[in-house]
Length: 136
Image (cartoon, rainbow, N blue to C red; front, side, top):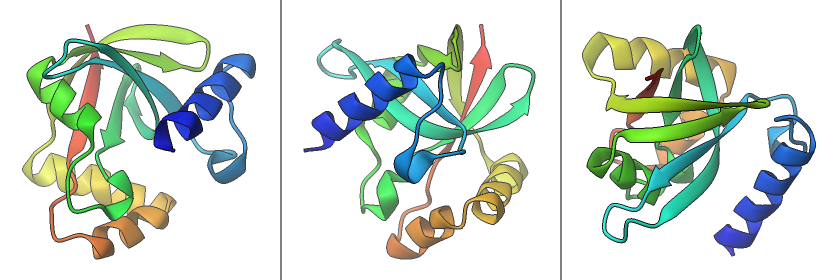
């Protein structure tokens, strides 16, 4: 079950100052806190990120190449003010979807750095959203 898998990653992240092992060992991982688009319920999702500058990061709505976007993406569209746990810091962020050249540049770097993202892209016909999280 995805929820149990996420819970294990979240617990490991918090126990190890933002570091996790397994499939994510050595990769930059954050915990994204969103508000449910329909329910208003607080949600937390672990995900890889790419640091852009300072506290601004990009996250990727890949959902491992599934045909639909992940729930957290819809949550951010409805409620763009969120929180990100990065390492031992908790940062209030505002989300926006990257477009055009900005999206291409960030996405191409992510695929080059982590080829699994290129696999996700091959598995789906949708354009995988790149979401910028800017400190607010």
